[in-house]
Image (cartoon, rainbow, N blue to C red; front, side):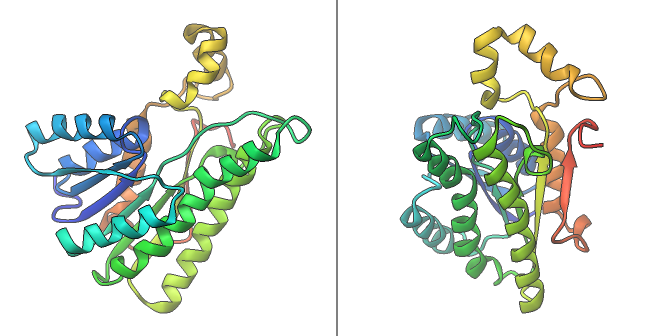
Length: 255
């Protein structure tokens, strides 16, 4: 269990879902992890639970990913207390449904702030610290919605597709600079996380999961650990020749 031993990772949206599952997996594989989330109470309690099994390996951090000042302070905190950052997982995100006529401008901006602009800010301010280790990995969690579109997901499709292309731009910049940082995006389909709650509460969880599963060729939605293992691969040295790419974890839906 040493695939990322002695590495330092920062994961956003780490209080639940894919972010929390990835944090737990990273720690099991030897990393020290900063669990960052806007939900301070939840990230504190989850970090405390992790540290009971893996003492001092989880560090909670309140972080509003849409605020530039929060990102600046997070990097200052990391440099002062840990001296480096090897892995950045931009995972924080929110869902949205609305076609181009129904979507309002305020919601459009909010979706892009949380899903896209936060990724820009995280990468912008993390690179300066990450390049000191000469072996960094940025993993931006996009969505299968960044690869294939839906008629009623205008803002979400736009933001997640932009994350995919932004990741490529960052990868090429880092490659040109020879700073040792790789950057890739991850594209999950339906995963059993709280982001599905808005959908499931409308028609009931059992019916909702059945409807979503019917859209996946392999007949089921994914679990957070399915995505976490993909992120782990991109974070580890096993993927040292992988940059500017996308890892699709979708049960075959994009095929």
